[in-house]
Image 1 (cartoon, helix red, strand yellow):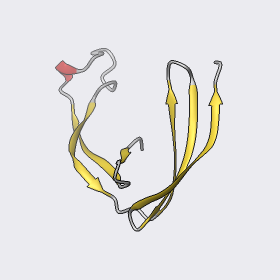
Image 2 (cartoon, rainbow, N blue to C red; image 1 turned 90 degrees about the vertical axis):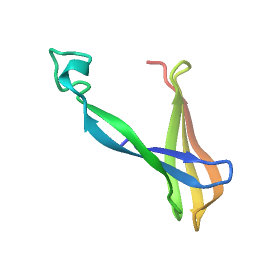
Image 3 (tube, rainbow, N blue to C red; image 1 turned 45 degrees about the horizontal axis):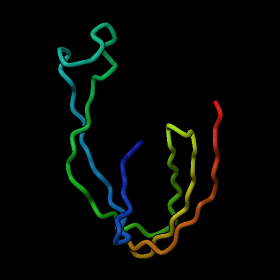
Length: 92
């Protein structure tokens, strides 16, 4: 769902929550295509998830086209371990 999370320096998994609202037609970037840009995310706050388990996630560098995949372990809401599962440089 492309939700945003952060692992803090203190080792907590924070969910950056949002609600969605309709963008007035006069503010949409492409008037001829009304569905593009029809919704916007409005931040509603940060929530400590108190997550317990394994979390797999990835990140990329759009300039170098490098991708990394990670798995992090959380116990009773606290980060315990993280491992790099995969690294890939994409040419296309």
